[in-house]
Length: 460
Image (cartoon, rainbow, N blue to C red; front, side, top):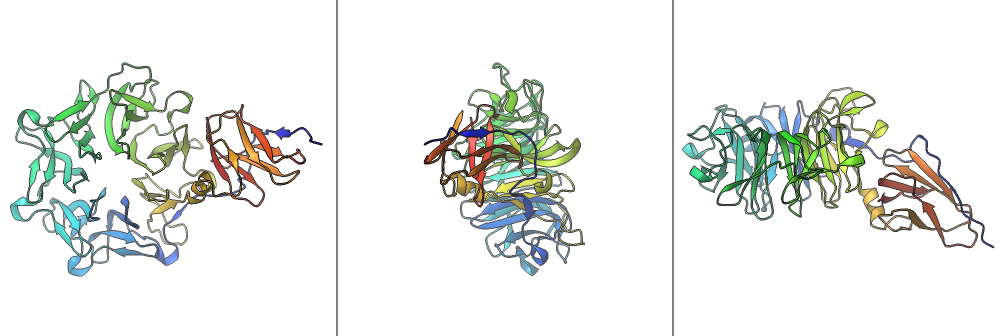
């Protein structure tokens, strides 16, 4: 005889029954141990690269690589990177060459350097070197391996512009009527899969900062239109751009939504819209500015900047999973941070890496390290490798669960580790039970039973 299901939802905070959090890449003697800010991280071909405003024992700014076991400098001795400071960005081309942007020690001028696996070389020699005292704030590579740089570069008419390395020399991207014609500095560059170049910064049109697009012939503008309910209201400054695998364009910085909140903006082909709006808005959690944007292969989007945690201004990383925003790690699992987060990236398995000013928490010394947030166990459960079988995923009102034994208990947590509800199987002889989700907000949740890995699912 079947007994009616007893389903109990108790909404209260409790100590998490599982833990996943930020930790340093490498432990003890194998941590990064930078002596200043880690400003750039990049993952390529199984290797994590990091650069920043730090120096080796010879006082060279350098790039470090993590091979899975230890950190090591990329080039030493005569092959060292001869920079005063290393990059706020690292780029990789299709041949896995590494590019960095920084100042040469010998001249104090900016230069793009390329690492081919054995040595560093300047892109251009003599008069062809990208050789300027003016600030260079950003650069990128396209699908063909061309390198583009921008910042406070001016053409002869005083307009800010983008420069391209064509293999032999640097040249302005568009001239005359086809020039960018920006009236202020450029802070972000990204290329899409077709080779189009997108630029953003402090330059404005009709009072709004905008994204400019180079299609190989001329520049066009992707401007704020404010003709839909969820369109962006105003863009004061664009500090970061990200283009995902489907060529969706995301912009962050100081961008005001229709609800007057700082937000992440997405180009829908005709206008900029908030990601997302309404109750699921990023809202004022990162009210200062969004400085970094990245994504993973699952389509999640991550932003970094300054946020509020327990009424205190703190650096934080936020994740958009297609339904809602959540902080990546909170409380005891939050990032071990001492200052602003400067850079984030993901690897092919979905592990998230961050750099900035994160003091060593394993030792008394105050080194600065790269940290990571490992989502791999959650990804495994999402792809059906966990010990709990439940469906559908995403779920709307009801989650069906395969049950194995009578009187077994299932626990529902949010991603912060807060217990949201408990279900006790009281259906003798039944193979399937159901958990009702009517009172849950949209978002991502974890279902767990005793001695099992959590099952990750989304509530629509």
